[in-house]
Amino acid sequence: MTAITDMPDLPRAARRPQIGNPVLRWLRTNLFSSIPNGILTVVLLAVLGKGVFSFVQWGIANAVWLTPANDSSACKAMRGLGACWAIIPEKYRFILFGTYPFDEQWRPALSVVLFIALFFLSTRRALWRRELAFLWIGALALISVLMWGGVFGLSFVSQDRWGGLPVTLILATFGLAFGFPLGILVALGRRSKLPAIRSLSVFYVELIRGVPLVSLLFMASVMFPLFMPAGFNIDKLLRAQIAIILFAGAYLAEVIRGGLQAVPRGQYEAADALGLSYWRKHRLVVLPQAIRHVIPPLVNTFIAFFKDTSLVLIIGIFDLLTTAKTAIIDPAWQQFSVEVYIFVAAIYFVFCFAMSRYSRSLEATGGR
Image (tube, rainbow, N blue to C red; front, side, top):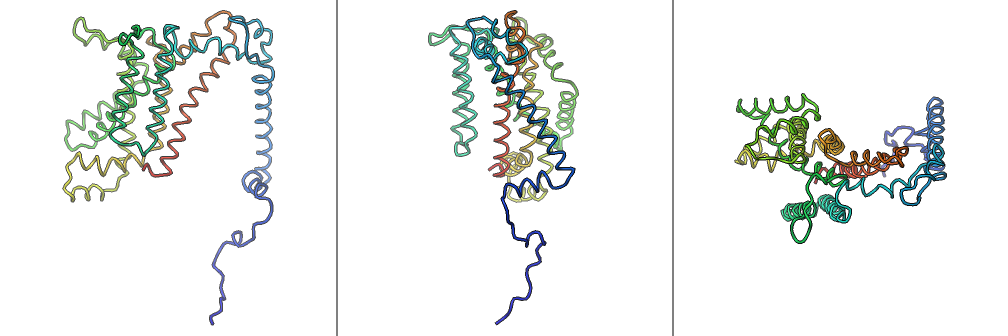
């Protein structure tokens, strides 16, 4: 019988039996591993505790939650001591839907619900089939009918009356839905062997990325109609949408190009050996791997563009942030802008955090 004379060559810490409370062990390892780390942890916890206590006292304990209609006297009496959340139920319909006709605001509300439902269904990988594209087309058509009206007994509402969260979702959704395929084409164009296509792609990316989105919105609003035939007018929401699509396409192109460069050369050679055409090679072999490599920067770009839709304020479009700013023009509620901005920030956070969490799940599964 052979005796076991040697133990596996493990680190001493790994061979030492783990005893004691696991919570205390985690605290000792991560927060109090040394005297400087312990001091820093205590200081940060004290600052965090003070901030949380102050916010709870201001935002919950001393807050005013409801007041009589358009009466802010109770809030003014607590000015500086507690938050005035009563401004939210007073102004939330204008913040969310802008100047859309009051009696018809169920239509933009239903449109927001449809957008959220589409986003949720699109995260279910079991539904990633051709039918999902048809579902998107049908839902977007229904959203257009709801927002515009003029058919099925719905009164017509011009785009000048649109505002709030539906406008933000429309600009972000269509901007990314059209900007993403545009970015793929431009990224492939930058790697093309044809000098004309490569030069045109480089010129487009460098031109768009070399100017701020604000200037593109101004150009789309002021200059774009000059290139249209006489008598042909495009409303400012569509002009802003075109500018956002072009801007998103240029930035997404660089992200996707980085993913294309990360695909091993052998994958291209293997696809060529199978006799795949250029487009089939990229659709079936190269692009799925490239996009998998750049999921984090892609989602980071999506989140940035979702927030950048607030810049349409400069051309007179009432997105969510703009309606929030306009809501506090009312002299009775002018002093309580902080509460409105916190409410709007919470809405932005929910959407951005959902995108971030979904990105993490895609990374964990390799995008499959």
